[in-house]
Image (cartoon, rainbow, N blue to C red):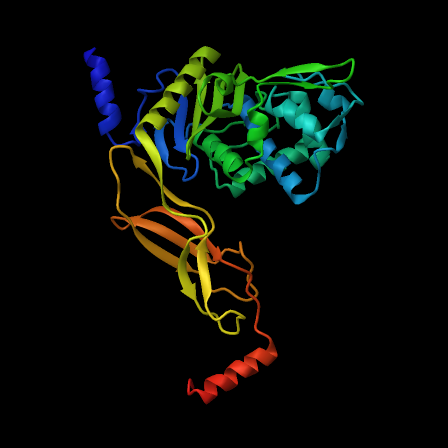
Length: 379
């Protein structure tokens, strides 16, 4: 009883960035972050390079969604399965050589069943070969400025020089859920079917059981190999607060799931999301020479929020940094940043844009304004 009371005391009165192993006694490495800001709430050996098994596939998913967004591929595209893809072992959806399957169904097979055959088929479809696709995966990691990740294959099967870290995995997961939220439509599927109206119907059951049993869980990716042990990238959202938990190197799936839930419980119990300024709020007004609008409203692209300990409420000043912009400007174009500042430290930042499209003033209107300014003595 005394230990329980001590635990509750520590939970609510210590700073919420926790170092150590009290929530992760068995895993080799782990981390808990808030998804919007990337703020670390807990860490254990976060930069240790380890095998990450099928969590590797999160980078594949980023690339697939980038290709969809760019219009280079569509969900209805049919992929012809190669002999190489059909021969993949481990987790699979049992693709056959020469089989035609849609990009949508491949993404389900990757996201729900962690299919290695589906992953290779998708990689070959996008880049021509798994080798070329892996180069793009490593380039994606470099763009995210992650220093402890290198891939040799797109599946996560054990190979020398194939590794990542819990911190890097968290940043990859964050990239997925914040910039490609479509992934949650796949990762939250608990069960589904492929080839449902054929003689070769295949039942998919999600390898991530948290999406069924943990409140707010809707992703993200499991992993298991001999070298990696049992791994999990989990995300859950309650209200405005989304957390991402990563654990690597667990001994079994039950222990892995429990320690991830302990981390998420800690996060939801100890911190909150507090929104300071609202999306589309006017935070400044500027004038740009030769603009067709005399005064331009600068607005927030999204809510400006901070993560706070539930026991405290901070006070903040705001600093606006505007770019040197040129016309024309469209609503949505980035024109600078606004920062919430406390004790001379930037706590949170938000992108700024203009409230409407701004064009150059016509030559006739420019001459008219110049003449009026002259007549009324502006010059």
